Length: 250
Image 1: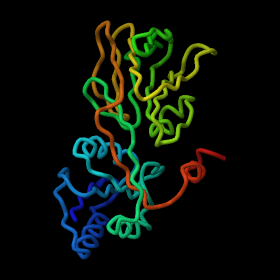
Image 2 (image 1 turned 60 degrees about the vertical axis):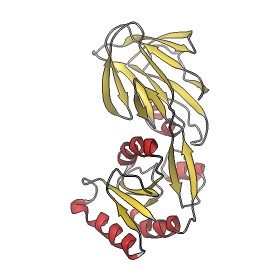
Image 3 (image 1 turned 90 degrees about the vertical axis):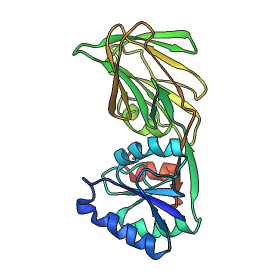
Image 4 (image 1 turned 120 degrees about the vertical axis):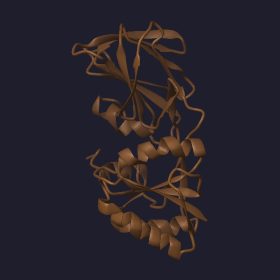
């Protein structure tokens, strides 16, 4: 078996924990793949940000991800640091569940959590929103989020969007600070095409990272990506129990 290691140096000082993981795997007869190369799976050491960055590469290579949380929330990871070796044992012996997660594509870039079209100036902008070429609304806001079920517990949730089960095939369109009491999020299918047209220059942000600037009358189209990422889950904890554990439900 071949396993890759993706470590966040800011979360793993001196890559000490990554070294322990590598020694553990080698002792099991596992071949360590160079970072970014095809493997049976990658073990990701960090938080949600590390998982998001790894997901974009892993989806293209069709490599599953096993996340060990070294950060704060760790919503995408499988287990916390103290349970990392047990999780690896289960992954190596096939005792796990694989979850395919929907990803989005916009302007050629991939996102596991969300695509954000945001204002480029200090004032709110009027964004025109289309679904399958049908004009739905003109929304005066700081921006528009198009999120996956995985991303529904991230930025979209903070902006007032609903929580979607991560294995669902849906997208949620959530305005950011809309200047209207009647504006609400939309839930659409994963097969729909969402187009957001700002009145001028706007920022395109994928999974929290600035991607490009949008200019022109066509705006940006967001739709299901041709690839998806596979998340390994060795801990049999129901999704709604995870929400409570992470303090998203009380």
